[in-house]
Amino acid sequence: MLDAEFFRRWMTTTAASVEREAERLTALDSPIGDADHGSNLQRGFRAVREALDKEPPATPGAVLTRAGRLLISTVGGASGPLYGTLLRRTGKALGEADEVERGQLAEALGAGVDAVRQLGGAAPGDKTMIDALVPAVDALGQSFAAARDAAEEGAVATTPMLARKGRASYLGERSIGHQDPGATSSALLIAALVDASAETEAGGE
Ligand code: ADP
Ligand code: MG
Picture 1: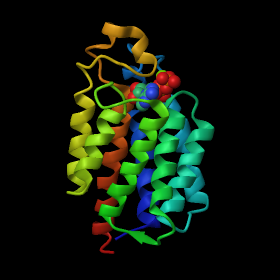
Picture 2 (picture 1 turned 90 degrees about the horizontal axis):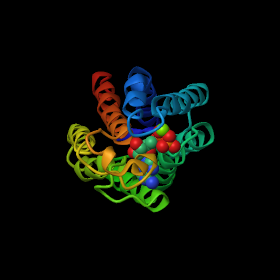
Picture 3 (picture 1 turned 60 degrees about the vertical axis):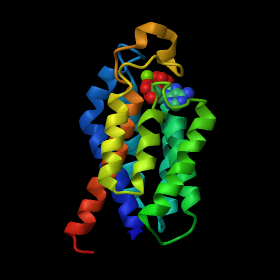
């Protein structure tokens, strides 16, 4: 079972890997964007980590809705509202439960991804974060590690795609040949689930 502490670790582990990979995310956003994706997410996840450290919410759903709200209010750019919506909607779908199973998280994250698709209008193949998130949700029923691998493969698979949404779409054909920064950060978010769950096992909880 996954409790509020697991979800807090998921968010703080994501914050740490965004911190570590910020330069790479910004570098990916340079040829097909405006070179701010790393700094955008760094600002957002720093705010999330600080808020959750200071006052940890009591339930899994509350951790994610709080994180989502903070991302919306602190991240400029398209990715703030999109990631914020992802986490808020996922948190809302988890409801008030003190603990949830991985299958419930898979279902809730599916609802979160649907909300992102609705907000941003992107479909699979449009070279966005959706291309990492959809395969991750599909694999999450299997295991966290399967979801991590699926998200990473999904991110890598954006390289030959033509961007149809967001800033990169302004480049048309010239967007081809570059990995999407948002799909790359989504793979970090999903990979952090593995680290958060490994700590649960190591802690013998
Ligand atoms: P901005 O494009 O405003 O500078 P960021 O650089 O922080 O914002 O984020 C860019 C990423 O956001 C893209 O790589 C892409 O994955 C994602 N993105 C942009 N527009 C959309 C959209 N309509 N739907 C889904 N994801 C999107
Ligand atoms: Mg950008």
